[in-house]
Length: 452
Image (cartoon, rainbow, N blue to C red):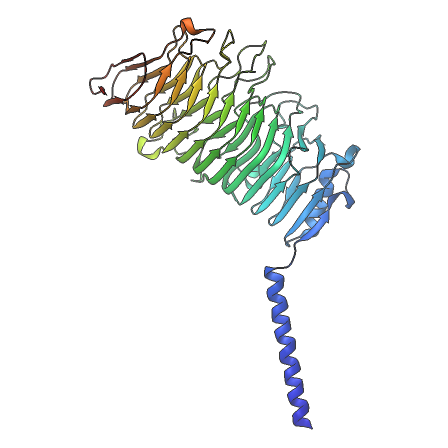
């Protein structure tokens, strides 16, 4: 009997151990994440309630659910920090803020491996409406946590999607960013609407002082309307994709509003990294940027290297299949003050299949080495002293092939527009021109030539 009992006991122990092991395996791989409803938590305002949920979830993966509410219970006045493996999920509704930054920037800070998502553009976050001076940052709504503490720090795997951010600040700026990714790695912003915000829209890249940079970033399928400053900027990054975004009526009609460049590649230091950037399928439509306080859009797409990153360390940068509209053909003025696309001192930039219409300078390439301009269309640009296509400056080398440059006779400014390609460079190996449709092509460099 003892032998039988011992055998039965051993079998039971084996079953228990196996079940326990299976249970542990399931908890690691298939268990559902915890859910915390922020509105049910204690806190003086919605921001404090969200933080209480984040603390309650602790180190466990989980979702923080948020719904709109009246008064302070629905206002994000306390700075929010979302921990790793937590998702902040907003229901449809409006979420105001009266946040006053007393230290790190940002209404909502995301740690590595966290997400923020809404229910689409019916989820509306707002800039801080606190009546405070410009010494306080009331413009940054979402920021990577580490970058909020040190601009040179890195954050990994943060994702922002399916919501709207609306302007509410009482003044303008052109340094902070509504969504600040900083030196984020494997991060994304998708299907977000920035609506009337009063500073830079989305930025990738922070300081390079520690050798860090943004990497593997996707900015895709977003909408920008009346964004006051740069809509999308990249200052220090590698493997950045900016795809299928729409920038409608950039700038704001206010005498205090800054000028804006909807897409801006602008490194701040020779140590910054500009490697493998792609801008594809974006639309910049300034046809309704008709402002009584003056033209606010300076250029459409600007890729620059004024800080002199070595040519062999810059690029490639691909600018492909974008559309830039400076005005309707029937308009009596253009609403982009400078160039549709301007390559300024940047090497290894490839322009292909872009369309630029009704901009004073259609495409301008200044002091650029190893550039390509292939299969672009420039329509009704080059008004009076401006030029439809201009290649200028020093150390110029590249290929200009298969482009179509012409004046639409229905343009109200047709009499002063041109369909020319003008080379006014002062030195460099030269440019090869082939199979372009243009009224004329003027050469200035000994090494430049035209092939049939």
